[in-house]
Image (cartoon, rainbow, N blue to C red; front, top):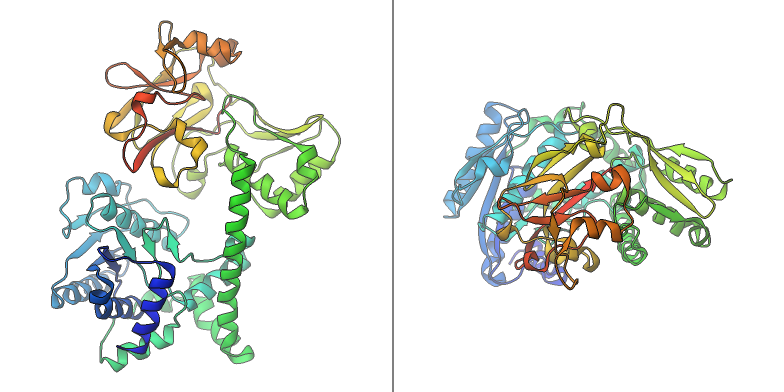
Length: 498
């Protein structure tokens, strides 16, 4: 067994990246790193007890060169008698990959197209990972192995430092992504993987776009890292990657602490507040974390930065009545990343009250708060509800990854179907939240919440094809519709007025 293979199997067992019986697709672009990962896992697959296949996404960015990459990888799979999962995923276009692949067979080429994200690299990455998730959803595989290296880690940390980041950003590339995507080569150097392939007399494909200095990562890879190595020694790259490991452990600690604060657990109809006395009694690091968690829970569309968090903490220390505007809160986050034309909602302010910071919203111009409304809500999907000055999103989530206090609001996908009707409640509507004695009129449930006026009239509910209320904002899901499998439907209001 090659010494790299010995190191890799120790790493896999140490971090439980793979287990006997796993069906693992190696994400192979054709480049040296991914080809090396494939051959290492091919060497180890009998000892690991895994079923191996290859996944490849053709973004069509380099015309014939991209097609040659795909043929190279397909031949690699064929020469080892392995299943080959592939997708054509050009960057322009807006068709969803799930819709494009409905009913597709495992191992078949899945054609798809997605809209651009924040740059070509980000859009391509989003496409690849959507394809990987789709392979898992369709049961083709249960693990994806990618070939990120220690050099990739160092590049990522440096790029995030240049663009501005905190401890979370310094954590860089994580060894696991939702336990399904694993990156077992994060402690391996790019050069040693190429040496491994040369020793095997194994060729690989070179991506010509990696030489394009228009991409910031290429400038870091081709100019900065060699300069760091020359000036400070090869160990400097190792130390940068170690910084990511340290930051990741810090981030895991804080994530556990944040879950104890439950800053996102308040019902959405209550104006979100953050009490200032307990906030300011904490160490500065904890203050910053709690403010960020509060914003992410209640204003996910806002542009959160170090400067904004410092401004909010200054507001918390300041006089009653003062307020600041949240940058980026007048439009949805997804519209900023692409060219979506969802209408903007009203801007959000944070105001200092006597005891707390209060997140407020200015009404959007022209919003009609008196009329009934009714919209089709795809599952998964997101819609704009101008009457609420908000967006409602239905998404598929992993039940095991959902915190306990949020599970009460989840629904069983098998019992909901592909679409719901999202509307405000009507006289005669009835709803039975879990953990209550019996079904009640919606009117009575809202009276218990002291909802009045437009707030009460516009309260959103979701109705299935039979006209049954299956969701009501701020209330537990019906016990009869609770999830019974590993996946669940989560319905949430984003940037709501109420």
